[in-house]
Length: 255
Image (cartoon, rainbow, N blue to C red):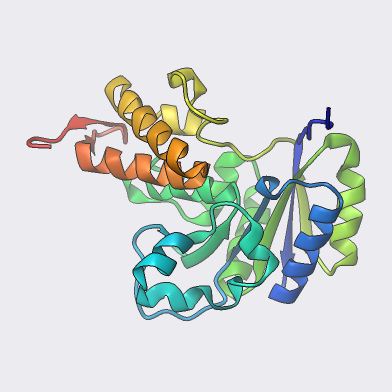
């Protein structure tokens, strides 16, 4: 049987050019890092439209959306190999191209799962996850300036190897957190206990059941956890309102 990949740490790093990111993704894949353990964020595009929700590549391809132009060089690049590639509006940063498990964290923040209805900037998202505030602030500032943030979830005993790889590729502001990025569920959700704490703590019991049902249905159709979580949050927003504590608990009338 093939050896199971055990990710225990997440290494974050900044790159100035997308070409560097493509090269690093290829090298990580060649070293055995699964594509669903690599995340990338960047905003190296111009858009006159405020993007208020998540847009998948599939939406762009099938729907012919005008915003499809913002994907530009994603097609044909190694970034397109990653899971859950899409665009999300992040408060204080703007439209962000996100790929990999970091997308679920950003989606949860934009949906109120981390900072309530006020929304969360990238600094808030990363510090809530476990990154020092000063490092998170540097990442947010440099993302705003057009640079790229890459995050690789790696085995603890290989962290040094991958840090050297990122440094040799021109990575800057490297930081390691002794945990991986949270997923809404690892595969299908069988109960509320399978939900990540960030999601579970901001849903009432009824809303948790609604979330899980929609999540599982979409996951069975797409096999994409990010797309499934996006659909689940959309259903929550359609059926519930937040209470004063930021918990989605109030059932909407005539839903």
